[in-house]
Length: 560
Image 1 (cartoon, rainbow, N blue to C red):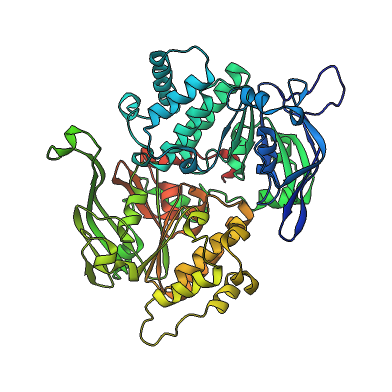
Image 2 (image 1 turned 30 degrees about the vertical axis):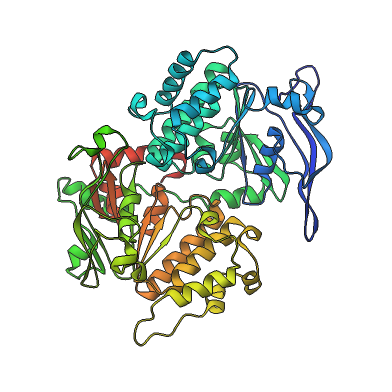
């Protein structure tokens, strides 16, 4: 394994690694003299902002660097041997078997045309010589159970699109575990997961480390994940190691200003409210307030009432009346003018389905939807019922959301043409919008692949605003961003929603971010609304057991 050799003082697992990338504008240094250790049976965290070189380092360990990367110096050790000297046959015995990976993009990691069970079974047979098909299937189902897939025996035959995003990531983790590896390179493995599922996965990874002595290199921007699972942390910036140390010591007393700035940008979940604590203590059984528009008596900009949605699985029983999985069961949601309303819930709770129905990307089996008092037929798609002109959506992955063949300028101009300008309003200007979102106008000539993750997500926000919608549905728009960029995006969203008098539905599993951004919140569970009310009240005073479970899953280090 990558290791600290006890017989050689100061020996490094990664020694002085320097990598350059050859691009159209010349060579750029991506990693500069990087050295670190990885001990058996530990979790090593790699943290830093986008562009720090974290993922490049992980790919270098996996031997997955593209051809345009040149190694200028340094080496990587595995079982005392230099990996850079390994030939293709040696890599065939190492990658996937002894060193495996969990990537952030679960969509790209799974074959959409193949059921997840056979995909997992295929990996098990490829990495375990001599195992029978029957034993491979038994192990596949056991792994699905272990990573928390419900009804694993039945879901064995389901396809990736029939799982929620969090469930797909759990399947990817199961595949990484299939070969019983020595090292796992985990690149943002829980960024798509809600708090409770994330905690389950982290506990699982910790158990595996303790039981099998596997080592994990965890690439992440989530400081909560770092505090929960890592033994040691390496902080990177601009391809260099800025600081490293034992996790608890580094998080409690960081030496470097850059590390302190990263920690300062982490949203904190506020669990106490000095102004209302005494009042709540005097009347602990007081009724829970409803959403703000219900208290104020003002009509909402959007009211979706009694929404029902059922997804049917492919089987002979699919044709039977009433057979299927309810995704939403009599759900009612209201959005205010100039405010951001949050939806929180575990994977599979129906929160994204609700957002897609409001955006006109999904139909509903029953219910009504009104915007500014006008009803829309949600039994028909948005292209046919008019919702696409009223509602814009910001997705989690900006790279998938942008057309790679269109320049940034062309993408934004298309949005302006698509939008409907209200009477008395001016058509939005692309250049002005770029200025408002802190984007250089020179980016208009670039293509998506030439932008950072934060820049791409800002372009997605600009595109949504330039279409002049009445409502924006933002589904996990910041989960793929590092904490400093995330803070900037949150400020931009709040500012634009308030100034334009529109409404936003913000779907997220980050409770601290929802509390910081949203005025009201709905908590979904199993396709129903489990809890609702003003955000501060929900987090500070709600006594709903499920709500408290979500809150308790939040890392305690980042609550106050």
